[in-house]
Amino acid sequence: MELTTPTATLNAATAEPAVTVLAATDLLSGGRSLYTILVYLLVLAILAGGGTRAAISFFGGRIGSTIAWAMVSVIVAVVVGAGYPIYASTKRTVDQTGLTTGQFGQ
Image (cartoon, rainbow, N blue to C red; front, side):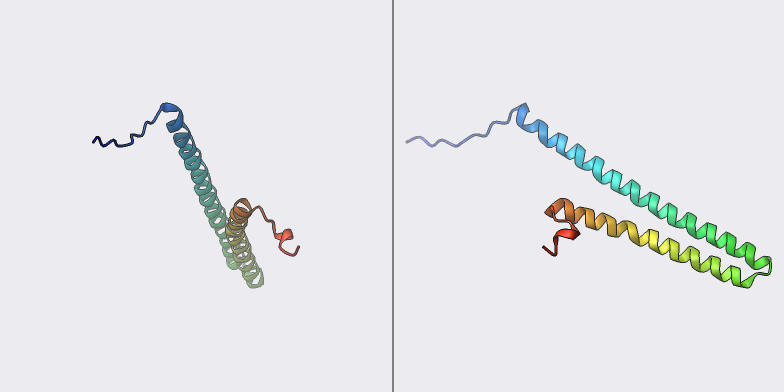
């Protein structure tokens, strides 16, 4: 009585696509990280610009302008900072399901 065990053979043609997919996945995740960092830098620039303008207004004796510049910079920074994650989440959902927000009511 002879026992045989199945053997798996792996050739170069089947191993190649896995490496390519992994590289594409790494590039996409790296691109997302880069966009996230750029959005954070943009938010910091908005806050720094608004704070600088508010400080100039404060030392110029214009208190109303100081408050307005501070509030506008914070509001714009929040909209920009919150808008990108919402966009990224929506895009990921659309990419996975194929449904857009206009199709949910149908």
